[in-house]
Length: 284
Ligand code: FE2
Image 1: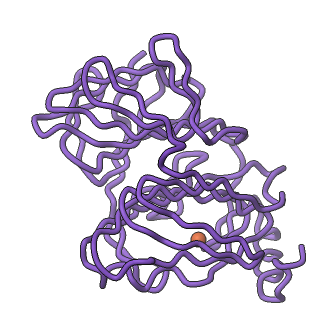
Image 2 (image 1 turned 90 degrees about the vertical axis):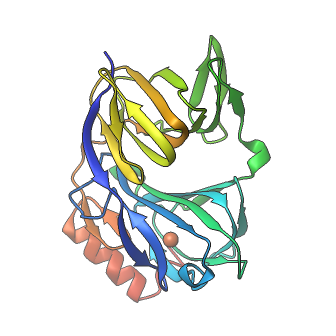
């Protein structure tokens, strides 16, 4: 069954951190999510005033943050002494688990800064696990040339290229996320099997794309939630299209969110706030 357009969640202009301008689609309102995806931000600007202030030190607990840099350079540092450079084409997959206090600061004062930050929920039994990182450089992300034109990058999960399974660098995540970045030429088509057990959405960041059967044009800079099904069928418009596809197993667990803390109960949120205010993230 083809996955069609179920819901469109426009990316709304907002700012976060110390004033970084971005567009938030998923998570713009706390109830507008797609289990297990909590939030999607796209940042894209050639104006340093929109990004230089960066994201100074702030905490997270109970989920994972995924940063995909399309263009630019940011330095990541946390309270445990971890440090990593996020550069053009690279990905940082951070499992906040029981607690991380980190900063993400631009390492440039001019030029383009472009990319995504995605928040993915952790199951209840993993929310208090030890924090961890997977820092992926651009050369570690496999690319596949598509037989009908265009290419894709496999960031998480695996891609079946006519029977040859190619694994992305991110693995061993309980929700089994698939994260693809697909580039299609003018009029290019792309068809792919996405597990019927997954919730799935896509986000067009360049060009024009039509989705489903019958084909329906979707807006750019919006999260396009896909209906249940087991196949994705899309076609690029005259300008071609660049879009990301995300899918994962839903958790079906209660969510209580307070800013950067995402837990299952109100008591767990109160505990997170208390732990953070009492500097207990560092010693947990
Ligand atoms: Fe963060």
